[in-house]
Image 1 (spheres, rainbow, N blue to C red):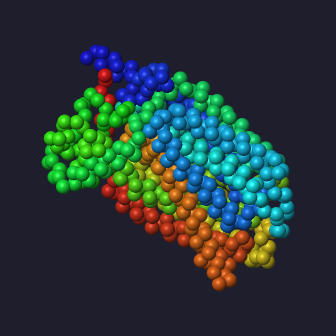
Image 2 (image 1 turned 180 degrees about the horizontal axis):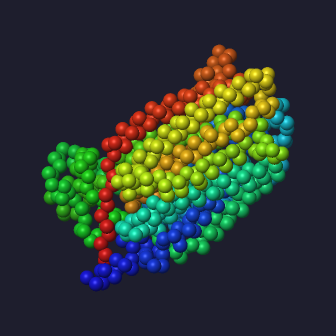
Image 3 (image 1 turned 135 degrees about the vertical axis):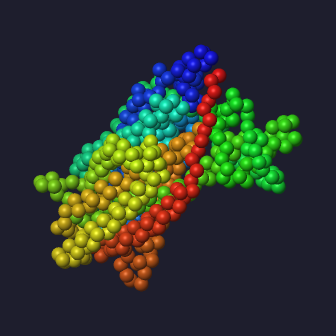
Length: 575
């Protein structure tokens, strides 16, 4: 008994191991001393990612000479691809390499992509000749376009694949089964997003200023240096990391449950759930993963765990599955509606890197004697996050806790829903500001002068940027924590990729929406809502449409959240 107690004090109870595969000790691994390296690494990687993301639409229009609609679609496609590859990273991590080695692999791939991207911007042969705005410019050749997109997509692929593994690795540094460490995990997710924001803030200021006022190659060069430093920082923390090793292919386990369910579809579920199949109490059902308690929803899947006499002779995983394995599938099914409802949020969020930026390009960007690039307005989104995150954690949570009695103040789903409402407000504000911008263009006779700078300060766009940032504090951080908490141990990197998957689907959908709206509203000689001449376009109509769609999605989300059932796991027994 005393030995077991000492083990409780010495080792983690959530199944984590150190870099050598040994059970992780509490004293020498994990906690903030390890998570700190993950956070610094994330900040540096964010400098790289947002150094591309914030100004990509202007590189495509000003350097590669693409149209506004084409550039907006390409940015959405790139952002979507950079997010959808999170599924690849999560799958490799959970199935084969584990969080640490998957993160390391894609950090090096990311660095290679950034080196190629910097070269594509630096070498004259890899880009078309520069020209003045408003004149017919020579478009980039297929070879020039191909080199640029190969480099930027290589970095984007690595970015998406790296992200869920890195965020999950950081959360792994806190033992969920330890009451002293569990609250620190919630704080970690807030600081994780803060570290991303700090990196984005540097990208929105230093990198963007360099791209606009020095050269694109120097700007991308800063991103490459940041990426190199990110690799070094991450590797330094190696001896301190706690890590969940791979638990086997999660997709195979899912299909095993589905096949076993179909084979036993004609059987009746036992009244006593304890009669369903599960391995012995002192053994994990899935390597390195805690068992999951049985739930009463989706009971048809429980048929996969019904024990027949023939199953006892030799356990065939395609005929008999454990309760934990069945519950893994239930977890995925329960999370899918939340994933789907967050896609609309991502569609709205993607406007910040496209239409917001194009709006800013027509406005007065002077701040006193200084001229700021429109892309730097995202600094107000970053500042909003930096202000709202500690405000939420230090003031709102204690206040809300008094009323809700929930330790987090709001549940993850309540937090996500609040963000949906806030981003809906951002679209209302964006529409009102655009109405004013069009009025200024009309009053000054500049409707047919798309290259002219309107006598309206670009800082009119600050409120919509600020509201988008505030919504991220609720929705994005809530989604990151929700998908991590609600994913089984053996699928956590894959589950953590769902937030980026929603972002990817949102960006792909946004590209499709822009194309459809551009085509439908531009029929019969009419000027489309998203025309190249922004002074004749109607971004305001587009923003109103998004506000209405977000409101409908919020109602759908609230229904899904009301019926959601949270996962319950069983602690590891000491060996």
